[in-house]
Length: 126
Length: 105
Image (cartoon, rainbow over all chains, first blue to last red; front, side, top):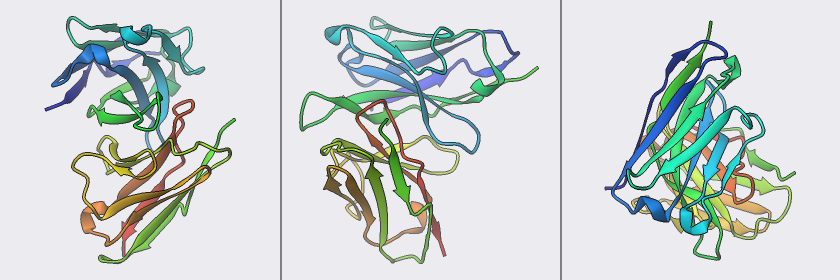
């Protein structure tokens, strides 16, 4: 069974750091891109960052709202992805999800998320 | 910038009724569109990808159609467990629509 399990959430003060982990199983981790989303209370889904597989360059993209503060990485030997969150702001409060990105059957576009973790809650408050 | 507009914002129907949800893109996305279901307190779940392909394990009452800028998610016969927010998503910039909340009357 394909699984993604996020951990590392919790309460942090503004300006502090947290590191989220996304532990995966049931598939060949190195073959897939991973993406982090977040969802503030009562709001929609917002992408945070994305990391391609090493076969596709391992490149990383970030949403403008987190660029310079958040860092995504992956450890293919452990099948784990990470989201390092520094300089946290109150507006970073959300449930954070990691997801596996899959490729369209129509062409070489990796764009839809076929497996999601249950999420981990991050609360930034003084 | 690409915008996905979903309508209606809320859909209230009786069990067994047909639900029709719309997603309109501000520019063509070809057929690179996915639909997700998010139940309260849960993570999103993929329903449809490439506009019309049902994801693994998704009941046949869910179907997707459309191309270019206009897409539809249809639930042929609404079940109580279908109460959720439904989001569409296209291939650029990981952008989601604002969602349609489906309620049972």
